Length: 74
Image (tube, rainbow, N blue to C red):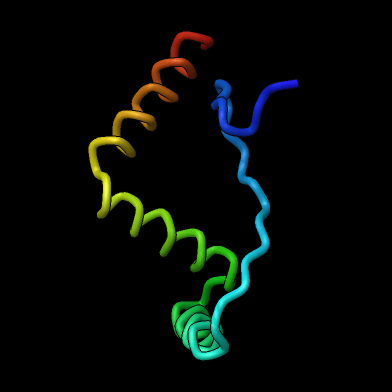
């Protein structure tokens, strides 16, 4: 069985459960309604863009490595 931290050729979304302050939850609900997207989709987008902003080279490198593996398999 592959470790969850070891990326394979096809990365699947992973379900997680987190606890956030009520005010943050309300802000997410309002923003997701305003944008017409699900709460889950908005939360995933905000987390991913925050990680990209903190470490842009690491994120781009891991994406390109995944793309390279995908292209080699096709």
